[in-house]
Image (cartoon, rainbow, N blue to C red):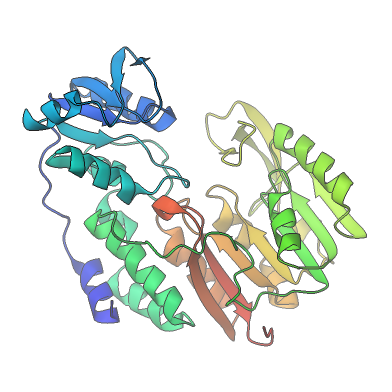
Length: 371
């Protein structure tokens, strides 16, 4: 795609979609997202007759479950049923599901992104109304011009096309096994002074070590108590750096306590109706003398605030940044715009590391850093 195509997509009106039917519906999936979607459909007066799942389940939320090979599904398709997809996560290729349902014979297949245009799906990462998921054409043009390689520009173009056209054939070029250490992005490799925002159980540290990164100092932040326990166990065993500090708190624009939804998962996040209180710290206030060379933030939608809380640190130390930009729709362009102010004379990259636009990471690397 060319920049003219991207700007045209940003200016395009919303797609004219068929209404979601009130009956003759089957739901693909039998997990948490399917349960949420089923509840929303029922709340809005839609009648779902069955579920489809590859696992040998009998019943899901009171509905019969059929495996994709069951001949009854072809009868459903011949009878004009609509298939609604209830799977939306990083590990499942959405195009494979669409292709499977199409081969069964379903004419109308509704993805979570399309369903979101009719019904609210709660806090579901980058999903929103189509017009809210993309920047203005001028901002898209600026970001296109600011990105440093063809792969980044292709990723941006396909991300915008996916959000506008709601088509799973976009955003297919995954860089699946090198998150935070892409071979073609000149992030630092030796003597890393690393800030790990959203350290989870230490998976990023382990991944960087596997990618032959060497640590001089590590500051790791993880506010979920269950995750933090695993983090301390794993880091104690590995001893990543001589200067090492693990903190059971989050990063934000201000030092304060906030409500938090603890799940013991990588998706634990700040939430107004959270089940616990956690401490969030402003990096500039609490670590004014630490000079990182590499900052990673994967903190479930709090990335922009955390960056605002480390403005002085970034301007003084000029670290490389690896910031997730898929938790909120506007992160895709608002985080690069802030990084442009904090790290002038730097190269920008965009990579996608998982399905469904999950694990999309924006990399900002000062030009003095070389591969």
